[in-house]
Image (cartoon, rainbow over all chains, first blue to last red; front, top):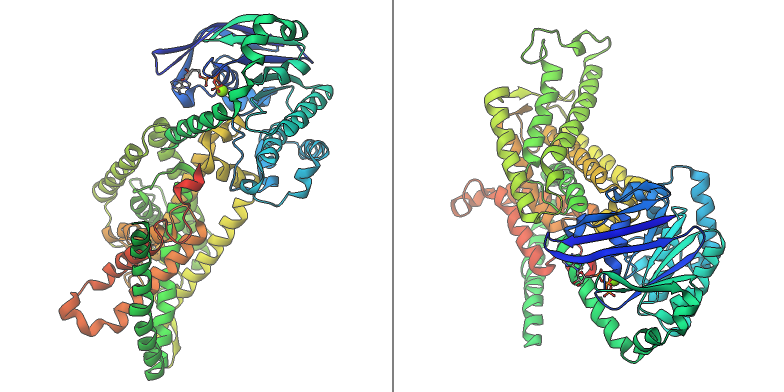
Length: 264
Length: 354
Ligand SMILES: Nc1ncnc2c1ncn2[C@@H]1O[C@H](COP(=O)(O)OP(=O)(O)OP(=O)(O)O)[C@@H](O)[C@H]1O
Ligand SMILES: [Mg+2]
């Protein structure tokens, strides 16, 4: 359904970040995209959701096809309308808005009120905790609640493909399991999922297919179960957990800087 | 060291509160007993002034909140909109043509003609805002905000030149139905325009608060908080910018109309000075906190009150203060306000933005 073919992305006209990336997300599947810091995972998501512009990035080669249509240079709003929504890295909830208002922003592209109400009920079913906090300012939610809100917000557009960029980032193991189960539930409701993760164990345990990304290229791909059993994968991606905490906090800092630059 | 900095920040606040506010309050209480009529008239004028400032400030805030840009062209937009109103109500012909002004041939009383003209002027201002945003601001999205602010300054100058040389602004009457009439309170006259400004400000603020809770308004606040995340939800940022500019231009135009009336001025006519209302309202905007509608309202009222009361009760001191001193008062109030609250009364500190 989603097909990325030989994609090349360049930032600031010189920094080549994706070098001929090809991945595929078939309808109804969960596909995992794994890779270390700086491999180009988020860049891939930006390319699919039309947000490269914001970062002075550009797709210089290759194509992104969605349901047979070329969307390589489509606008973000068109892409959301066509059925692809992403849950951004670092959650990015609108901290000054209430939970309900955050969800309303997610449903912005849906004109039909009945459909919005349906999506809203679905989100409340999936995340009962959000139902309790509906009128609360999103900034005061805990990290896990914010991640749920970010996922709920994305579901408000009733997507056919949900892209999650490191949803386990900075969450406690129990919460990661909870998020993982929710992703499976969402997928069972008929939503295809592209799951981007550094937590390879979590992602591969629920995915059908997995891709491993290194410096902008796919270096390995295959059935998720096979990847889980692969020795290289075990050594490089499943053995890394010791330094997890430190790495994550560093990334948060990087993310903050990036956003600042765009705003100011 | 930290302690020292803390004190430094608190000291102006304490100094201000005890050293300035207490004597002023005592002084004003004395004036109230001395001559309640003058005091009441001054209070009403200060509310009229504050409402006018608040309306103009709200225009700044709407545009700033959505686009993070201080629009320095608000003054020229105020003049352009008010000029349009003046052409619509006061001229026999459509400007630069020999076509009869269609509003004159409408049935009904004069105030109805004026109302129709006002609605048309609002539409005109909105379109002007949209066009300017589309042509000069949209292409600059993502560029340093300082450059965008300078572009709006250029726009201000360009529009002023156009208004002066091509349209020729010279005492163009806006013919408000209430003119400079008013009602008596003892020996003092309270202008109806003051009441009109207060009512208009109230309507504008209620409208903005309702808007902020609507679908589009929520989208605007989302864009204000995190543009990229808003785009990822499928929100069309360009459209949000356009709406903010249209609304900002309409508010500027309304502010421009009130800038010709008491208590701001007695002339009831648009002239070159009308544009200054934007710069005079800037202290209110900054005191309020730049991105808060509530701040614009409170900032406007505080600054307006300070200016009018100072103008009334310090008039004997012009030897020391200089004749034009009331116009400076808003800036002094703003400075003191910023010393106490660096982000303005309701402003968002930069840290919370992240
Ligand atoms: N706006 C930008 N301008 C220039 N280079 C960028 C920009 N954004 C990302 N990069 C670079 O592109 C490379 C890939 O970044 P990307 O964010 O896609 O990686 P990632 O796989 O998502 O990493 P992480 O796991 O840390 O989120 C990095 O080397 C990064 O420094
Ligand atoms: Mg990333």
